[in-house]
Length: 129
Image (cartoon, rainbow, N blue to C red; front, side, top):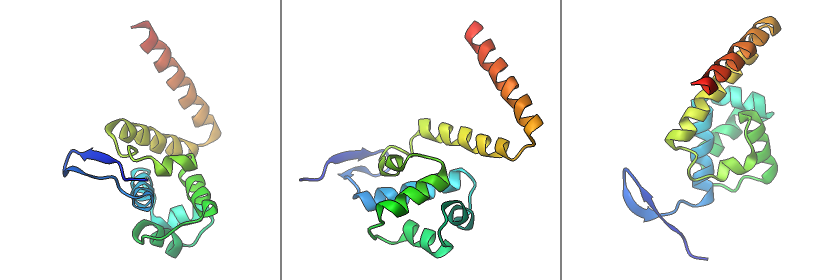
């Protein structure tokens, strides 16, 4: 099967990255967008820091189990690691929302309920205008 062509805004036309390159780029993008260190991702994924580091920088062939663990640690579906468009402006906004969600999970339960009510009210007001 041939490689697909794509257009990179910064580099112009080129060849589609292989899956391993896409996975490496996406793991690093999501991890850093969430404000996570490699150590934090390793802990959240049940892996070693060395393994996470290798996944982000070495062109290897991670197992499905490894990708599942990383995706769990990043709180996203495994298939999203293969998404060539993950680093798009729309997804950057989504990642910012995810970062806020993770920060909210650290709040006491009472504050989480208040925040949930505040968000629901904000959304309801948006529907009125």
